[in-house]
Image 1: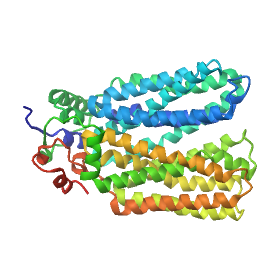
Image 2 (image 1 turned 30 degrees about the vertical axis):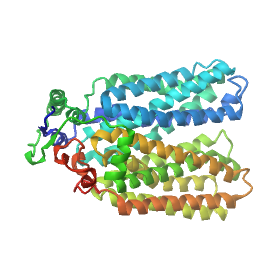
Image 3 (image 1 turned 120 degrees about the horizontal axis):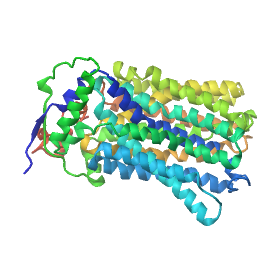
Image 4 (image 1 turned 45 degrees about the vertical axis):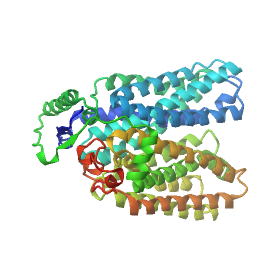
Length: 495
């Protein structure tokens, strides 16, 4: 029979000063968001190219389906690999998911025709690439949160999530060069190989990262956990840093975790943490709807209402992406200082309110292509930080044993609702003859974001500078043994 183990490993991780180890880990793991931003941007940029005779000569419907298949792959990957990450470990999965992405995206470039067989091949490769990226979200967020000291967790996680837009800039520039300076039949293929080349380099860097000691200790791998944390501490000390003493009062006692499936996860979420489940779903759905609604119809608005040519839209897209990138990097630290609750509230409400103001200016004809882009940059300066914090929230407010699965579930929910955005707003844009429709659509988006901020104001968890175990006591902690799940919900560590 398994006995409880008293451990100080979480406290030892949280006391560490920032070191080159943490920098290397963040770079190696954080590339997942860069790859997703790159992948989606490249696919969007070459969409029209794939309809040309010198490429694959696909129909517009066939090209549009590529994004849908990729999205479905992300959802399936987040759920499937999220389960495996909780079961098999973070390290195995962040190696596996990156390899899956490399295979899927790399093979896309080798689609040689537009017959039925090649179309199936093309869609399959996009589905596989999406699965890899979806799995990355679940495995990587878990690993980063469990290895980053508590006082840095908010700003680091938010900055890492924000690098999606660095991928968007890279994808836009790469596609612009390849499609304009290289023969089209080769350029679109090289575009799909940008991500795999970057990922292949990162794959070698990840090989030297340790498993999460938190995951190991919760799964009865005590000796391996000790080896992992000792290795990390040694690497930090080699930089000349002196490690502060460990607070013995922060020790916890755990037993090896039981395997928890998605049905059991649902019970954990809605019986023990109902308000946190509502919070996570609301934050993820609202930000995903807004982003997909604006980002995927961005070029349509520029073309239909402002007469911007398709050749010039990448320049506006780069400006939009930079605005999104700057937000998390400049105000992300405030989520650790001012706090999660206040910053979630203000970033969501401000972005919603600014969208409402922009909607009025758009309807009255006060904007042009440049001022519209500036307005979006300002809106998403705040929205990007809030959206990144939504991912941080769902990855830190649930117990370790279900963390990756919880991320996968909320990511899947957000993607499903977010997929409605482009469809609805694309219809509202239409031929550009009825701006009032888009005006109403923007107002609805503003209300949705403000609602997300209000939910955060009342339900957000004050997780800043707290260990993960203090925010959500592990299910395997012996302090919970002998208590009912309902009593567990009344724990001081849960809302």
